[in-house]
Length: 243
Image 1: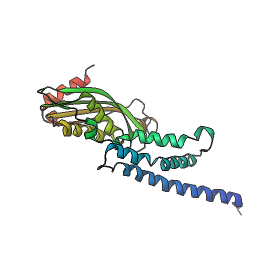
Image 2: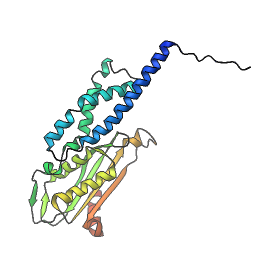
Image 3: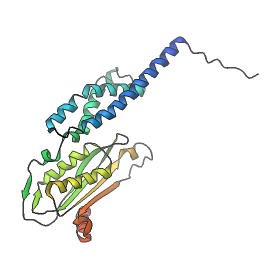
């Protein structure tokens, strides 16, 4: 007869596994709550930016508790010296990385729209951009170039960079981010056309998965004359490619 193995588990081991299963169940529940919490933070649409920020700040203790459970789940001791304040720091960092949920286009533009009889292309290129991939919660980093054809109104140049900040400081995919920036410029000054190009490196492709450290992702959004007129589009692309 084959030898039978003894799989008896001591009482202390049973207590250990019951405790761990309880922690895992609690952690999964809190992670689900965290996803809902982040989504809820974007719904302060009828309030001003200060109210939105205050509303998100109240989530810090709950978020810190979730991060503490995550540390336990990956096998760490959240009570050791190096990690004592990590849950709170991580919660504050995530709020900063997603601070775009606190901001609206109207408040960021702050009346920096000017009547100007200028009908030639305006381009601001290589705007540095940092965002968070919504699929893996890791960064993607790159540069944004924006061009538009004014329609008797121009936008303060720094406001183009501010628009990038509003939408990049959220959980994102690069394709949607590109389109949101372009549509915001349209909303701001109603130009004859807008072009946006983003080139970025995604940590979800660098640190995990295929681990291709030199890969770049390029996305574009062309609206108005940038889409319908090939000469306008080519002029914009020439500006962006130029050194």
